[in-house]
Length: 208
Image (cartoon, helix red, strand yellow):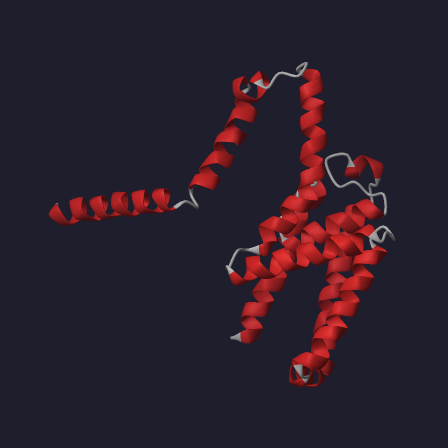
């Protein structure tokens, strides 16, 4: 059961690369982190990627294939030894993770400000985890935030500071409606309404 679930989990990574490379939109938290790594190296995923770097997509596909074989070989050789990591006491294991987090935060831009930002963000992430709030949308939002801001400014420059094209254009209006429906679908009012509708439909079918 563990092998099958982890295999399905790893299989999603390749599919998440399609919107990342073609549209520049990450489809999963690993893809969001990979987008950040691409941008650090001056690679901008999106529709122009095939023109700017024609071989890059094939290189990524080859790396994913090699990574699958490497994971299989590593798993076969080190599975028994890796399980022993779970036996490490938490008071000893957590400081190691904290040091690695500090190194990773500082290496992203080589700025001390990243370390000051890491502490409140870590505390916020802890409380979000305790409240069972999914961290994946938050990570994707942090990555896509600057991109959305840049495109919004570009759209406002074209429309001379007016938000009317967002409502009047069919494509933008459709996207706005989808976003609103996605947000409303997480509210209790929407869930209770859908439950009532489903119950009424089942009641009508039973009466027939």
